[in-house]
Image (cartoon, helix red, strand yellow):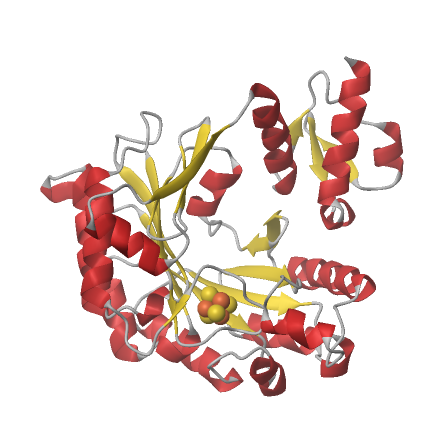
Length: 376
Ligand code: SF4
């Protein structure tokens, strides 16, 4: 089984909080991009664990993949699927996700995406408050989110995820409860909730340094995160990962592959690949990536082979990120201090994070790790 990630770096502008690897372009260099990704795909050697077998998931992330013309998406889906299985039965049964911004979702685009094999859309809604959307430098307004959901449903896309950002600065007076209610009223199958973080060299970072806004506050972060757990659980969602909640049968198969430590192949600028022991990542900037491919060089910027210790730490971290949890085997026994704080619970022979535990995932994993070291 192969899991493919395709990074589409183009955006029409940079959002105020974003430090992703993007290329702001008015005109998308579609042909150059598609040719570069397909060339990389033909020459990439993802390693034996990631290579081979049918493709089970493809994820177009970005950037803004919905800026690509639908024909380009059709070509990419078709060629990527056929690269693994040239026979006529190459298509069918895979989860194929497209990240989309609401303003790009027209009824015609949605129909064309569905025809090209896209069966899951992750929609960057972020908020239903127009003042907040403007502050974020998003290029859609709140009304576009509902219109986009409607267009996707009309095209037969039955698996839609909505992204929302929480823990915004106080002065925006964002009503998180109202935003969650508006999101739920649209009946998405999946929700991804991300707390605002201040990344260096973003517009938000500059606004904070000159005192024009405040850094998000930890208390608000915890309050809104825990409120979302209660509100979404009451609506039938299950948080199956620290930031992701789904209705029954709609967990992201692609992201679940990452979280269970399975190999994957990344194509495009800044994309990461993992073969089970070694992680490789491509040149971040679109121009550098494009040049490397055009000159017949590898676009891989660097790689890191995980030591046994790193692999184990990663396994623990990933297991605790999800509701699968960590098997209670030596040396991971329930630790009285962590259990009494209510951060972990025992469930069917596994340690699972509570929502309070997920709020402190990094420190919890460190504590668990330090404890096991002292036991050895
Ligand atoms: S659309 Fe997404 S990737 Fe592009 S700038 Fe905004 S947050 Fe970043």
